[in-house]
Image (tube, rainbow, N blue to C red; front, side, top):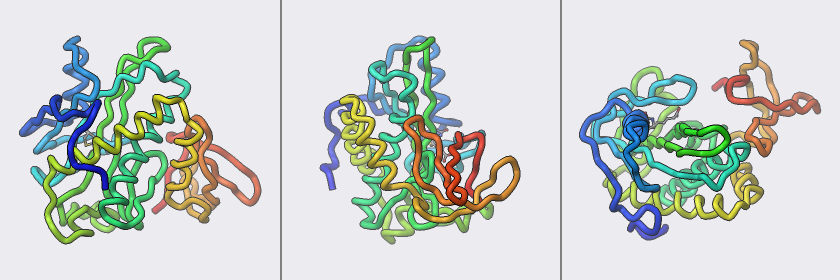
Length: 256
Ligand SMILES: O=C(O)CCCC[C@@H]1SC[C@@H]2NC(=O)N[C@@H]21
């Protein structure tokens, strides 16, 4: 495990804790659009996030006070927008590595950036990029981790897990935030170094269902193929009987 103190970019000085807010991503976006200058590494954390947002317009449900729900501000102006996926890879890797080290079980990345333990989702990431033309203004990295919640709504009960369900004890949320931020910092340094190949290779190694036959939904039709990796731009590569096809997030979904 890494030390549980903040370091460098995430020094713990810029953590704003909100008791109740619809969505930390939304809150951060609003602050940024009001042109309030915020330092890179600013974290908005919510105790009760009651209308959390997920990918593809989904909702992110979280019991008040039980989970880690936060958004952090990155200013990746060094990154060409065509390399956006490497930011997704870096953030997913940070969460997966942190959870694997803490829980002592492998945490996998379900493409593009859900975090799974076994066949259950423990966390999710929603990155909202704010670009100005071809340059970055900022990236809002929203992360939700199920921590002390042990019961889940019917719709997700069979496919959700939490840190408590694995460790059988409560965890202190601010301490988890500090630990996770140190993992984020480490991957962000790799991203800044421009070593996208290393990030991609690391990401691929941790892909959920890599090398396995799986059922996917493509154009409302269930198809079976083998997940073989991702392209440099983050498209999911599937082998259908020797015929390789790649997809973006709008074109394919996993069938559980
Ligand atoms: O699994 C997903 O689809 C992504 C979930 C992302 C949830 C986090 S919680 C903090 C931040 N604020 C939001 O409204 N969403 C993200």
